[in-house]
Length: 411
Ligand SMILES: *Cc1c(COP(=O)(O)O)cnc(C)c1O
Image (cartoon, rainbow, N blue to C red; front, top):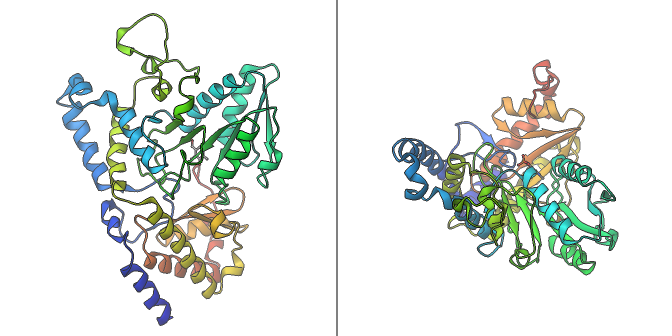
């Protein structure tokens, strides 16, 4: 035990990202292992929220669209996110939600492959991605259909009747991470356009959209990017497609000249075409501030720490002799994102009991206890304390208490 303690404190003292914890307002006596669902509040974001409401809105009123450059927020925030996902400038804008952005991209991709009628995805993709594809297929009618591929060997299932391949890089339940580079290359061999969902990638590890020659991508900013509940999402359109891509939600903010107020829609000849209505200025300003926490962070360093946190968590679990009670549903280290998933029939109640001890993780139906590892604010000591508490819950079977058994609306 003493040996573990000294290893843990050595890891913390050698952690080059340790100082970032100070950038966040985390409640005391809380270990937050759910930054993959909702990132915590960065101190700069809190300050910006006050400033944008009191000063920019309260005092500046409508002049702030120009004075504080609200109008370019979607592009500026987009470019900040671009760096974090391996994209050069002018390919990402911040807008709407993943759901809405998936609709735009799939519509645009199908229009670019007019003689193909299949959207391919995986059955256990995040439901909203599938639902949006279902809505689009229904609206288009005719021969359009969705084809469900097995997550295993996706490249081997690609055929040249597929117009668009829509995948989430990291499976939200198991944490399994798909090989973006290899799958995108295989899709391109069949002239298939790729749409990648980065919900559990952006801000969690190194993503290389340009290098992988991805066509389109979406992602959200309230998870590992810490933009706040319901913070606006982002959308990526590779430069080479921007001249040929059109999406159907032709709102005025995506117009070439919104303030000319012309009667006919003409898309902006860039990724900005994806803007639809007026941007959510308060939320986007808060996100802009939150992203500045990443200004000097190297994504590869983030990646390394995420892996170390997971290794330490798993080896502590092994040495606490409860590992066999919680079988790991996540794949090996190089094939997973920044989360671990454990299976147990009582996963929901275990999670509730853990929360009551100050360790916040989450549950995903039907039987997954999901643990997120956000390297900017978690320490190795957190891992040790979290596992100690989990071990007590598992050996004492505290999760059987009725107070932990009833399900809340949001899990
Ligand atoms: C969280 C998440 C979403 C959320 O979509 P919104 O429309 O922004 O609510 C979508 N896809 C995946 C894979 C997610 O994990």
